[in-house]
Length: 105
Length: 88
Image (cartoon, rainbow over all chains, first blue to last red; front, top):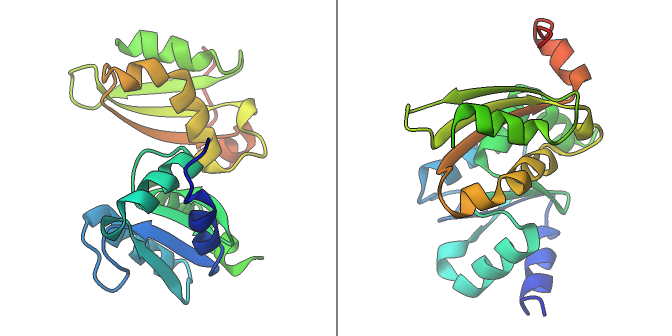
């Protein structure tokens, strides 16, 4: 039986074009990888980024990792789709793939 | 896990998979891998990475592989940004 909060994690992930589950917040990131992911998303053209601080809610953190089957944080969603962590969004940015995902072209 | 073992395991994805392995620390448990494979066709990068992590699940869970950074490409993507792959 999957974690009861998985639907909640999905709902939040779909609440904005660019959503990041991270340590801290986009304005005050509390980990280097989370901070880097936010700056890469901004560089790729993300206008508003919704951030969820996993440090503030262990249950949501557990449900998140069950949903995405991805072991680390930050975790980035674009238009409700799980895209990956810091390394992946950085690599996609360098290939120009992140920009087109965000602009939706 | 030795670089050769790692390379062989990842090549299990598909016969035409090209794999380059770098032992980042010389301790055979912090690796960077470049993987070019037709099986990545039409897949998001995170799905490509999950395929590799899936093949190495037991080594990752047992910490035999402690850190793994990956660069994944389809053959077409790789051609666009890199010199042709040497034949092995």
